[in-house]
Image 1 (spheres, helix red, strand yellow):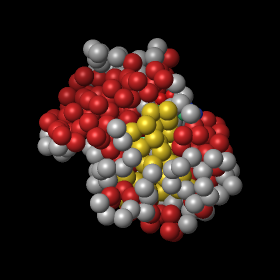
Image 2 (cartoon, helix red, strand yellow; image 1 turned 60 degrees about the vertical axis):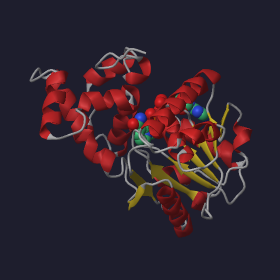
Image 3 (cartoon, helix red, strand yellow; image 1 turned 90 degrees about the horizontal axis):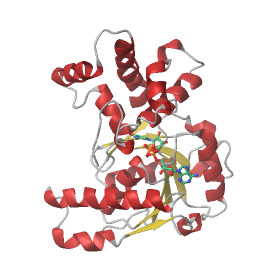
Image 4 (cartoon, protein in one colour; image 1 turned 90 degrees about the vertical axis):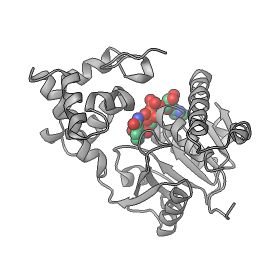
Length: 287
Ligand code: NAD
């Protein structure tokens, strides 16, 4: 294996994205520490990662005889101190500014000063997070897409204080796991999620206005050429996470009506119809 700038990665948050990012790393021989708040989440992540790796074997992306060894490369933990040896941390916890900042502050007192901290935030301006940190130069955005072990693009976001060398290390790391890193400017939602707001919000408004129902919208968008319709995609992302991202972008653009959320989406969030992760969203999913 070639010499890599980052060797030991810790991922904070073992939900939809944390599990996918961990899979991507394991498939490229990185040892991983996966941290979350409780064991139930980690058990679900373990099952999801095992399923992802099994599929990778079926698709010929991982040799069957390596499966066992690869699964030994990941440590599941609810103890943040287990991340202390990491030279790179990828944060993938809830899309909530206060929660993320609290975690970064804990990480700063734990990690060596040289460790890089990357956030997978979908929407929060990187400079606004890093300006709260003791060592802002080693902080940046690495925005993966869902499913993270399959989607190639990573938006790399340089904040106002990020060192050039940190951006270079992040790009090299992204390439080492088979991704295409693209450096983008630090604006709320960056590029993909800003463009995508209309994909979700206009689809929701079309349904609210009674113009079509959501299966019709999904069928139409797929027939047009999109891989998934907006409602199928919200179920995959997590309706709760998608709504949090919409609120965050709307707020950061000074409540510009172009990004305004819909009551329909809030009703799904309130009812805990969060999509695949809860078994029901716009569609139903059995276990
Ligand atoms: P998720 O709800 O599936 O998982 C979030 C996890 O964070 C949960 O397991 C929760 O227990 C954990 N968590 C919450 N607070 C924590 C803390 N203080 N310490 C450790 N763990 C904590 O969410 P997700 O979809 O995986 O999203 C995670 C991040 O990735 C968000 O910032 C989101 O915007 C971003 N993101 C999501 C997608 C997507 O499609 N879902 C795509 C790109 C980026």
